[in-house]
Each structure stands twice: as C-alpha cells, then as structure tokens.
Length: 136
Ligand code: THU
Image (cartoon, rainbow, N blue to C red; front, side):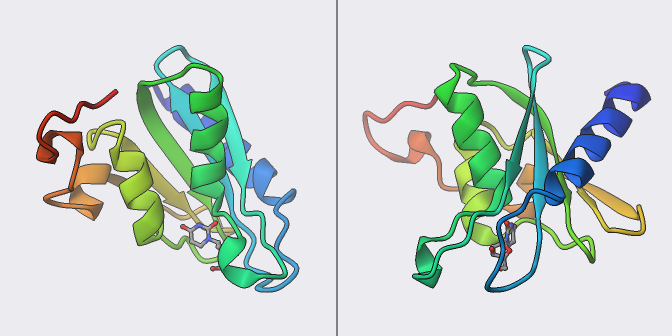
C-alpha cells in the first residue's frame, strides 16, 4: 500500500475516534477500512446501556462497507488510546472477507503496529469449512 494512502487511513481512523460513542467504557475506538474500490469507510464503537449490545468500531466500518456493496478489502486502521489490537469477534467478522487484510493499530501517540489478519486469527474458521458453504 502506498505510504500516502496508509497515512490517510490512519488519519481517518484517528479522526473517527473523536466520534466514538463510548459513555460506559470511555474507551474510544475509531476505524477506517480501505476497500479495493479505493473508498474508505469509517467506523466507531457504539455502546449501549445493555452492554453486550454495543458494537466495535471495526464491525461498524465493515457493516457500512458491505451495506454499500463492497466485498474486497485491503486494510483497516484502528485508532485507540493505547494501540490495542482488534478483539476476537472483530477478527472473525473481518476474516469473512479474507485473512490477507492488513490490520494497522495506532495509539494516540501515533505509534503503530501492522499485522496480516491471518496472523491475528490463525486457522480461521471460514465459509469453506461449511459443507456447501461459500464465501464472498
Ligand atoms: N472495542 C472496539 O471498538 N474495538 C475493539 O477491537 C476492542 C474494543 C470497543 C468495544 C467497547 O465499546 C470498548 O471498546 C471497550 O471494550
């Protein structure tokens, strides 16, 4: 991925983070997902008074993108206070569309770590594990 696009993706995730709705945990997360089309979809965590109902930023971004017809993705940047990596649910949710996805975690200080999704979720369960199942 060209460095200017990587920088844009990180900047978008950090800007999105300011829009997180996290009144319960106060752990604000912003995500920016780059589709193969070149479009970037932002997402934030959206918490709820019934705690388990809340949604992570990564899944918000993916839901927005898939709803717009996107199926192929290159990278996701995730901005948090401390550079935390995506949770297990989000790893599985993202893996539906391919484990070659680049995952970039960035902290408020700008420090970042990059993985392939397949490194974060080795031996992922996918549609090909379901007899007759198919993937995007
Ligand atoms: N959260 C995310 O948005 N993404 C992650 O990968 C980790 C956790 C959110 C969920 C919840 O709103 C808050 O961070 C604390 O767990």
